[in-house]
Length: 236
Ligand code: F6R
Image (cartoon, rainbow, N blue to C red; front, side):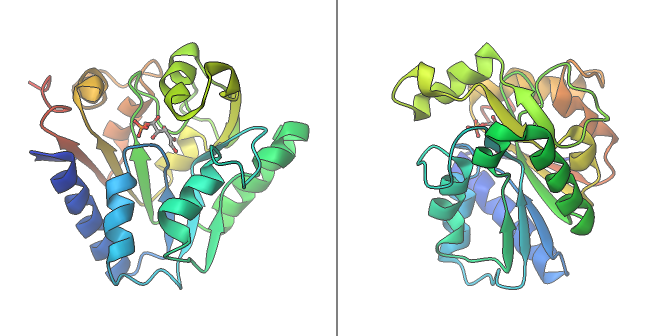
């Protein structure tokens, strides 16, 4: 694992943007993208740049089950607002949350096929406080592929800050599995703030265990961890 520690989230996001730009200039065509608060500065810098995405394909990690693309809490909506409206891609895939409410297995199978047809060159990840990657919570098999996941109380609570009440947070999501993520040629994982420090330490220094999904990244041949000083504060 290559580890980049910057003093602030802003500087760390700039470092991530540079890595993406370099990868795209070197020929990356398919990008795996994430939502959440972590990549917002990176996307802002991307939008302000002259980096051309019109020949690229994007595949997002996950989507809440039951939310339509125009629901302002859906990950479709998030991606439109933060990146796609200003930087359209040739094609962008996000799991269909509405269709998944009726047919989670069908939507998961279709998504696995999309990933197979478009092997991911660079996968962007955020890190959950409990070590999750995408919505793959502790205990998820390292062999998992796209599937419906039941969100833990911890994740529902963490994400409730984006909803008016905690009851509005969906209880399940469709999400890429850990095997899909590990199949990406390159992975960039970002984490910011003290609340991520324990998860960062376990991901980098702990044993590789399904109890800490992100620890599997120790086994990936091309991973860059980009963190701020607060998230790095527990590293030895
Ligand atoms: C988002 C995702 C999640 C987040 C993680 C961190 O697509 O899959 O795993 O990356 O929960 O969330 P933030 O960035 O809000 O701290």
